[in-house]
Length: 386
Image 1 (cartoon, one colour):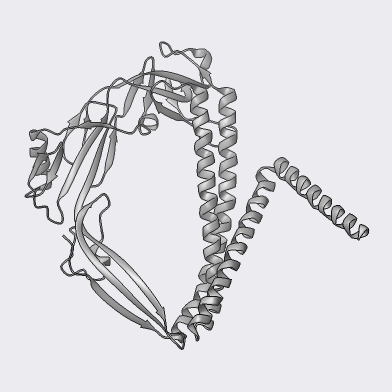
Image 2: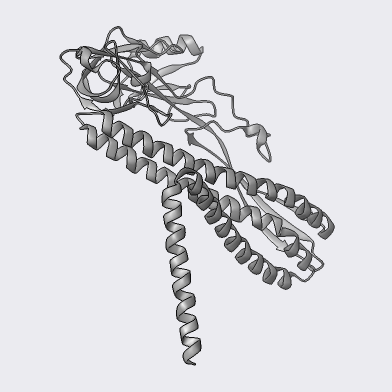
């Protein structure tokens, strides 16, 4: 149930805004550096991933899980087999136990949540008025909310939860004749729902010193699930069951599957559920690397655009003496920030390619030079005819 919103109005003088805008120049310069570092690092990371992937494609050998062949000792192998672990998995906090390769605990919290909406108005003379509306609602969330940071924490306190979502993996498992440790098992996502028992609820109640019972296939921590209160929790469990088929690409080390040390410098270890061929696993890794590379390039570009916008920020504040003029100036500085950020990103990526991909970079420079030379030649030819 939401409460009546709280409206807070703040006014900032033109001189204060101007001082903050000039202070933002330093932040903007720092963000420019951060954006350049992110873009350059991403290109190096992408190239290392590509080289690691290519090295793995050339080196991997698909083997049978029925026996450990000494011929492949220390080499990169691909093996597919049902995995089983000895012993039982245990939630160390609540005492719940289960069979499987890994046990996942997902915790949801019933808490106060603050949302805010702001509207800014520039007044004649450059001053600014900000009207912020804060609203509060109680709802189920996956991430705890820090009520001490709320605009109005009184009446909206959230108890600090003593449980978090986590995964408990088996220490060791076997894949046919091979064995795998936490390096492999930690890459398995528990997805098979597990319904707690009344005994599990009793153990959780003793551990938390709070009422706990099973509600809708989950442990409900609180007095009444029909009328939840801030601090109540819902705990869902899932497992990666025994005999789940795993496809693993790793180094064969005395029968143990371990990360493979590549010449590219990055360790190589791939784990997929189900029977997946080696070439398909490498293809998926390649696609994932490309997706991540473009996401980070986009993030770096946005950081540079925002940074340049902050550097140009004082121009808009100076023009805000006449609000309509400030709006016009901001449109111009926004365009400049966008174009400048795009140029800086392109130059950074091009420079990184010279370091990490010199052959491709030189080829692109040659092609670009040829295009420019052709355009100049055409322009001169038309000029001579005229």
